[in-house]
Length: 252
Ligand code: SAM
Image (cartoon, rainbow, N blue to C red):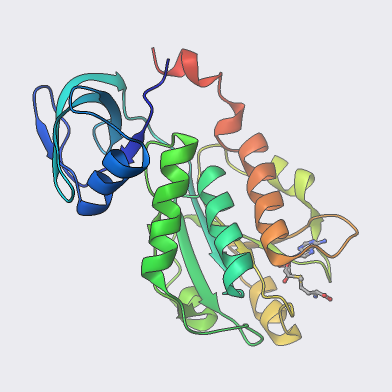
């Protein structure tokens, strides 16, 4: 029976270690989940695996959890960035939540010509990502980057990382065929355009780059958040960790 709550912490997790709850976490356990001292909770920090801990003290804005046992070991996850043009608040919340569930390791807002908004609330994106990671039982939180222009991203592109751009126009390769030619376990990135799409000049520049492959997600025009989910899902199935055995076996 899984613990009633699973929380992300910045603290180290080790046998007998004590984790200080944040004020929000203390409030959530005490007032929302009605926890009592002595109950157990699951904690993870993105480095030390997942642990079961026992609530030693729980006040209105403070609390401590004593680590008892590691329940899952930390393991490698796909090195898969999602680059996306910022969207309106609702669709962006959906995009972030689903990208976390689908295993993106980094979320990088990219300012393209037709971007909806240049103001990104990184703190809000991070809070959404933590909540999604706690719920989907991921062992990490993706890096959330501040927004940069498409030109800046491309000029500093890291060697060895492939960029798959979702392009519903032009000479794009069907996504299954494209990913079928990819490298399992490689360093990859997926780019999804804004609500209004890429401008031709952006696609021209992108398609000339040796590390770029344009992929098609079928004959219909998907919303950007749908395209991000679809591309991430296809990637995980062909090149990522959906190819692995079920988690129970992995956690042995
Ligand atoms: N150009 C679109 C139109 O005419 O309405 C608007 C862009 S679409 C809403 C947002 C983004 O999702 C696109 O820039 C692209 O990255 C991705 N996308 C949507 N449908 C796609 C498809 N069928 N194949 C590949 N990418 C797609």
